[in-house]
Length: 319
Image (cartoon, rainbow, N blue to C red; front, side, top):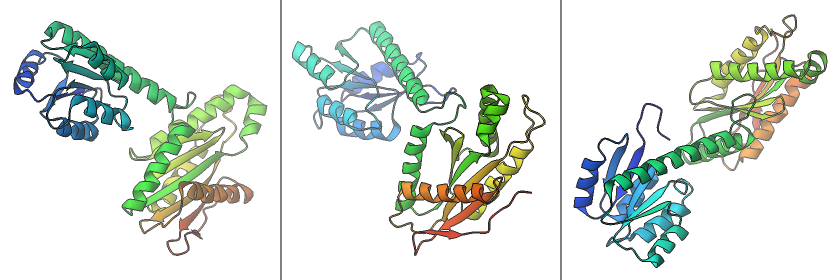
């Protein structure tokens, strides 16, 4: 999705150069970036590459007709939600029904009324924005604003798959708030919510843009650190742990809240057949050891390339 300062991208796929020239002129005052391709195959490749906000698609093209392009777009997970407005001289009910059955958002017959096309384009762009908002909210934890468990699963699977294809450092931390139930029982659930939100804010403050912080569930959080060797990730998580102890909580300023962290990282070698689930399980075991050995500490291990199992690093202890 384009940033707030960037106009949405509209992809025009039509083999008529005249249509491209016409729409470049007539849509120039719309707040869009119009990109054009004159063949179905090139248009499909471009759509998958840039993931536009809306596609204007002709049906009658020589190399790959619009129906084939539309079917391929809707079968691809990266483009299946992109609104597609069909622009076609084919006006039969059968063609329209086929286009809508394949997933078209709208159908405009040529020669088209430009004012009507602009209105339909704006509606499609609003639909794309709404779909993005719904998708984002489906992956966001409502209390903390971090990614939720589903978002973690998606991003972690992606990062492990990337590391398999292109070996690079990658680290994962499991974070748990110490004695969280006691906070709820002593100070009330609003105080517990305040702590959860405080941890989320802390993670957002201390992490880089490439890091992915999520609420895994309850009082547990995950932190995905791409391009980060284990020793660097250890420094990051230790910094987070120490910063947690310095927070003064409005509902219980006299009470310091701490966290325990289990960390497992790879330094960029081949990770073999280590699955995302096995990696998470290793981090969770380290979290268990951190809590069992006194809490308020980081236990870190390194994923061994040869053994495909964690190799212990020096453990950090509470200050």
